[in-house]
Image (cartoon, rainbow, N blue to C red; front, top):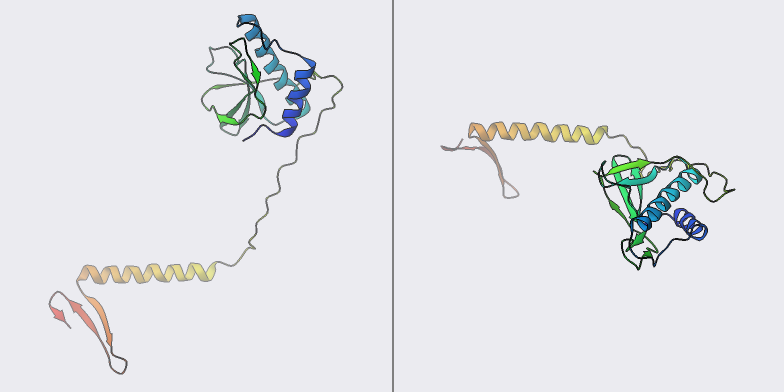
Length: 187
C-alpha cells in the first residue's frame, strides 16, 4: 500500500519546514535528527488526521525508535513505510513514493498530536467507508431445502453401498428394467 497522498503532502511540508542533513557523514547526532524528524511527522499526522493509528516503531522494546520509518497500526497488523534511504551514510535520500511493508511483531510507539507546522487546523477523521453490495438479499430457503434433500439422498445411497445393494435402472427407450445389484448378482 502506498503512503496516502495527504500524508505525503504533510511529509513534504514538514521536510520544507525542517531541513535535514542529507549529506552529513554518519553519526549518532545525524541518526537522532532523523529519528526526531520521524517522531515529528507522526505527531503532525496524529494532529492533522486523528484516529488513524500512525506512530513510530522500534524493532523490539529495547531498541531505539527507527530513524527512517513511519508506522501505522491497522487492527492487529503493524505496517511501516521507509521514508529515507541511507540514513547511516553520507548520501541520505527521501523515498519519493514509499510502499508499506508488514512489521507485525515489532513494537509500535504511539505519539501525541502536535502541530509542528503551526496554524494547521486539525482535520476530522474520515467517516467509515460505506459498504455496498451488488447483490440484493434473497430467500435462500429453496436452496437450503435442495441441499438438505441432496444430503438425505447421499446418506441413503451411502447406506445402500455399505449394505452391498445398489439400485439399477436400465432402459432402451421402450423397455425399462429396475432392480438391485449386490455381491450375489441381480435381485
